[in-house]
Structures are given as C-alpha cells and as structure tokens.
Length: 156
Image 1 (tube, rainbow, N blue to C red):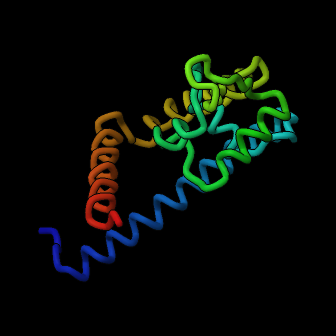
Image 2 (image 1 turned 45 degrees about the horizontal axis):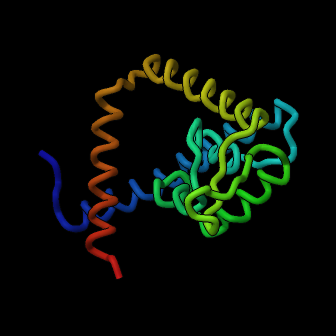
Image 3 (image 1 turned 90 degrees about the horizontal axis):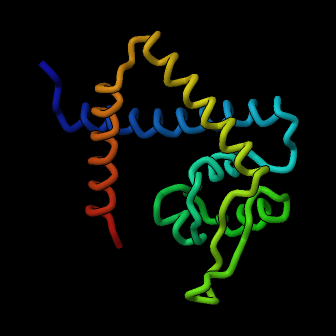
C-alpha cells in the first residue's frame, strides 16, 4: 500500500520536480551534442528547440511563450539572434503593423528536421527500455495536473 503521509507526498513531489529539471537539462545536452556534430556554432540548444517547436507555423514572439514553446525571459533575444543568423524569417503582420511574426528559413528547417530525427530515434529506443505510449501519456497527464495545481493554487 502506498504511503500517502504528508512527509512522503512532499518528498516524492520534490523528487519529481528535481527529476523534471534534470531530464530537461539532459535533453538539451543531447540537442547541443547534435548541433555541435552538425558543425553549427551560431545557435544554441535552446534556439534549436525553439526552431523545432515553431515547425511550419508562423508565430509572434508572444505566441512562442504563450504556447509553451519557450520558457524564459530572453525569448526576444533568442529570436533576434536566430533572425540575425538566418534561421528565422521575420515579417511584420499585414493586419497589425506592430506585430512581428517569425517563421523558419531553409536553414532553420534543416535544424528543425535534425531535432525531429533525434526525437524519432529516441522514441524508437524508448520501447527498447520498456517505456510505451500509455506510460508516457499517464506521465504527461500527471505533469499537466501538477502544472494546473501550481498555476491555480499560486497564481498571484
């Protein structure tokens, strides 16, 4: 039987938070290793992941953050650097001249495609270690509930 004491719940909760952070950091290291192997030196792993998340969309900087594609305070800096280095195309919105939309250039699409290949390879390897789609869906559902808990309980 599971121990649902307040102390046990607190310990497991903190362990989950630490694990999420470590997994994200390790995943970013995988991306960094791959862009290094590709000889790409003018973007970083965070920027490569932003390119993957943009995909075929055309988004504003605000939409990148709102959709959860980027978590951080310097999204504008990263977008500007990727525009300068030719990974993103930046255009003013035809409907709202104040709004700037970004989409991937051919150079950005190459990085996006490589990140996609990494994810596909990892997905194939997950089954080799006994992780299936149902388990990932359950994990995602729990993480979404934790996110909602934090957003609703501690929204200021």
